[in-house]
Structure formats: C-alpha cells, structure tokens
Image 1: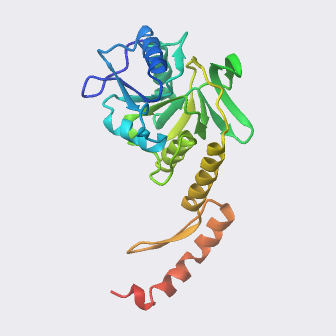
Image 2: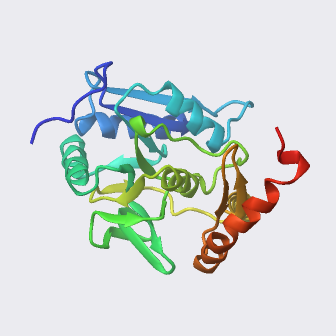
Image 3: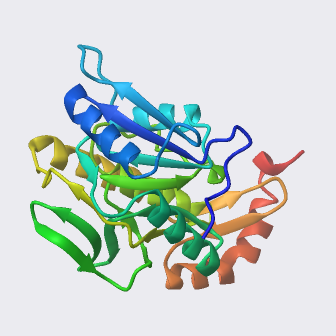
Length: 259
C-alpha cells in the first residue's frame, strides 16, 4: 500500500491540538514522529492554552481547521500516545474507508452508533486494547481524543457553543447535515485520561441539547419561489407535504408576499 496523497501544499496530515501542558504535548509529538508522521508530509499545529488567555475547544478547533494545510486534519488530545498503529495503519484505514464510503468526512477511534451502542478501538483507563464493533462502523458521534477530518469537507464547530465538551458530536451533526458520514476505524492508540464529568460537562450538555433541538426543529421554509415544510418526523413530513400546496396558495395572497 502506498502513502496517502498529499494536499497541494505537499502535506498529508495536519496534527492539531489544544495544549495546556507542554510536557504532555511533547510526549504526544514524539509518539507521532516515532510512528511515521514525519515533517516531510506532516505538520503539527497547536493552540497554546498554558497562559491566562484561554481558547475554548469550539473556537480553537475552528482556528486549527482554518490554519491546517494537510489533506487530513488529525484533531487529538495532548495525552494520546501512538503505541502499535502509526502512519501506515492510518493510511490503510482511510484507504479502506474511501472504498466503502466516498462521502466520509470524519473518522475516530471511539464513538456512539445508536442509543446504547458504543464502538471502540482504544486503550485507556477503562480497558486495555478494547475492540468493540464491526470496524469500520458508521457512528453518529465521535469521542474527541482523536478525530480525523477530511479537510475538503470544509467542516467546522458551531459558533454558538463553547467549552470543552461535545464538540466531537457537534462536528458529526454538522457533517451529517452537509451529507457526510462519520466512522470509528481500526486505529489503536492509548488515551491517558478516562474523562471526567465535572459541572462544566453538564452545563455543556444542556447547551448542546438546546442548540441542536432548536436547529433541528420542524419548520416552514419560505423561499422566493416555494413554501417547503421541513421536519425530521415521518408524520410531520406527511402532514406538511399534504398541506404545503393549499397553505402556499393562501400565503401567496397575503400582502407581505406581494411584489
């Protein structure tokens, strides 16, 4: 298997990280370089959060995605370490994903496929060399310890969310709306943290639920030439489809619609 093609700038992978501990980050960099991510086709980008001025994950990820020049952007935590798999294995996993689904835009090593089903390929404090799922497996959300973003998809995090939680799920929802898919792939690494659910986590969860409940609400879309009902529910779609024409005829007669 050959190396993944680089971008027009000659860079295949942009490894992007938010950093609040330089020693942790240096160890992460060393593990990537030892496993084939060399400077000839890879760049390493970071947002420095070691000082008093802090950048939250949503803003920081958008900054990193905008700065990245690689064909693929590896968003990862500073406390991940490559142990078995490296550049060749990631190349192979993405090659396989291209053959299965050319519309993929996100790939990770842990995520949720549906209610009650996790898909995992990771070592962390919860378990060693964990492999759950038929990989690669499509998922609706990805864990933030490692997310590979296809840069050509032009994804970004929500402007109206902040903090350090749920941005992986946020990216997956943005990708889904744009017609892209997300997968957990067979790429094993070690994550040193088990994750914590502090009060900030529950605040972020409430904000995430509120934002996306509003964004995915049922609605009538009035364009300059059509009135379109939009709903995620089958019954609402049937009702909207059946009533769209008569409602459109009525609204066209309203003074606000006159030109």
